[in-house]
Length: 105
Length: 113
Image (cartoon, rainbow over all chains, first blue to last red):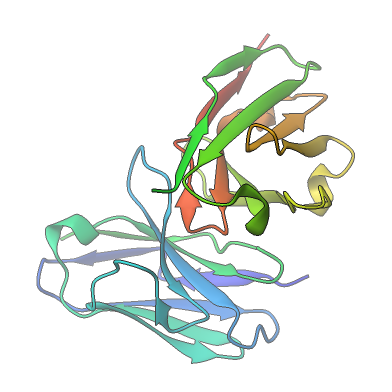
């Protein structure tokens, strides 16, 4: 069973700052990893698939990297609408990580 | 445009079953798998299962096997998720998601005596 661990649990940053979120898999997932953003009261939104591909309509400030067991979601310069919870997911077993909350410092 | 419209909120007693629908439009129904994902209050996302709308074949999360049934109606482009033997821990918002890129609005299922 593949387990995804996300760190940190909470990231407190200011608008304009760079956000770096980590997702680690208990065993290799190759590049079958996705990232989602979820705001309160809303459905999740797919940001990144296959580790580094932006989904349709996703701004270029969001980027994904990594392969194997270690992955990173980077938001180059936080906009006010980016404060949310971010989940990673293994796209083969569909397992989600526990999430990282990005809140306003 | 792709739309997934789910049925309304439900309140059920422990031990009962609930059936949530997800009516789709704006694309060829049989060409894309549909997932079900749930989220308990204040908690993270939990993948429940997947259905192939073309064949009707399904696969579900191990912890829900035996309690979750996913079906589809190709004549109405609708998928269904039924969860039986409900417990308080099943209280959650239930989402359908096409390829996990397009999501329904969510259906709150409350299990309470």
